[in-house]
Length: 316
Ligand code: SF4
Ligand code: MG
Image 1 (tube, rainbow, N blue to C red):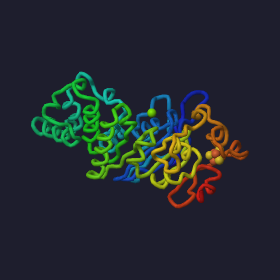
Image 2: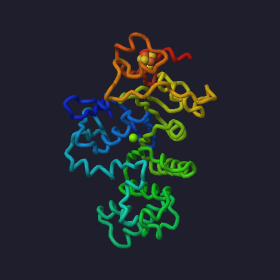
Image 3: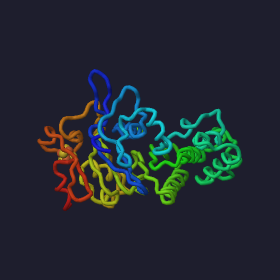
Image 4: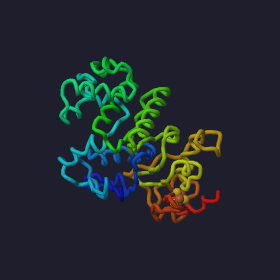
């Protein structure tokens, strides 16, 4: 993705995403992290080709050297499920309450031409693949008859059924309790290992992503604040916002033992401060920060930061 801009089509258009570039590689998990309202979910919708009618996108979303932004909806629909699939926070919202699980999980298989016994076996295989116990029985259940964890597994089975190369997971474990969360994350990691799927994992929770992310992209008010390999970003953030985020979650930052919340409230794209959008909350803000918008740039190989003073953090 290069320079993705998503704006509202109102008289006074708002750039919800303002020039976002990121890569998601096969067999790797890129975590997109940011506070609520930073534009994370909109980015997921843009990749899916499912932006609301009131928004439009410019820039590049490239898959296998092919630009998919702006192609006709019919072609886009063909890519959904087979190229890119998405799972959401609330599995209930993704499932049809009046349809049996097996029918929903088998939808793409059926559209691909499978029928009868072959279709049934395909569904059972998918449910078994995502760790649903007694899949033959569960295929006949309705969504409300399953636990939250099993429902999310069924949704993952649906997402996998088209053999996607990219899976977008938007806060997929937020609604689940901690042990179930952990199992779902293990499942995603296992699928990735076995199938080489690329995962774009959207979350506001640095603690969750620190366990699973290979690469990290930190979004602030619809712009990339920082990106790079997760381990190196977390151990040596090159942007004050990432530093503050890491410090607000003690378990991911070796440098602090106590949680230290970020002062102030998150800037929204609709009321983005001038210059560096983070400046009203930044303890290191100087005069230039109010005037000039820092562009994301490679500070050291593989490490991108959009802070005017990123170099100063290198030898901290
Ligand atoms: Fe802080 Fe300035 Fe860097 Fe923005 S550019 S993060 S305000 S120091
Ligand atoms: Mg969201």
